[in-house]
Image (cartoon, rainbow, N blue to C red):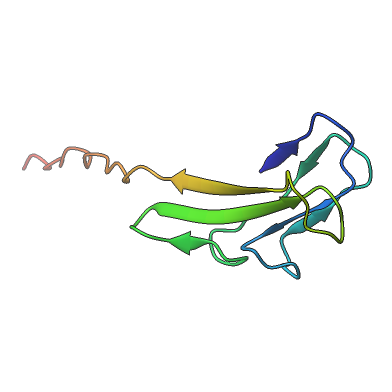
Length: 94
């Protein structure tokens, strides 16, 4: 997931309300960051089948909870698989 900011970001963003999450970024003044959210891990939940959700906490100060901090809910929906028709059966003439 890509996070884009209107100002230089010096805060922290992490998954699943867990400040110690393995899925986090620490801002160093850039205006965009990329955070990986696996389908299994970092608090990603599956419910119902093929629907995955997680929450990203964005804190604009690295150590303080402040007004303006955000919680972003990420929802990924995967369509049902499409099964291709099997190739026609070729019967040898004989």
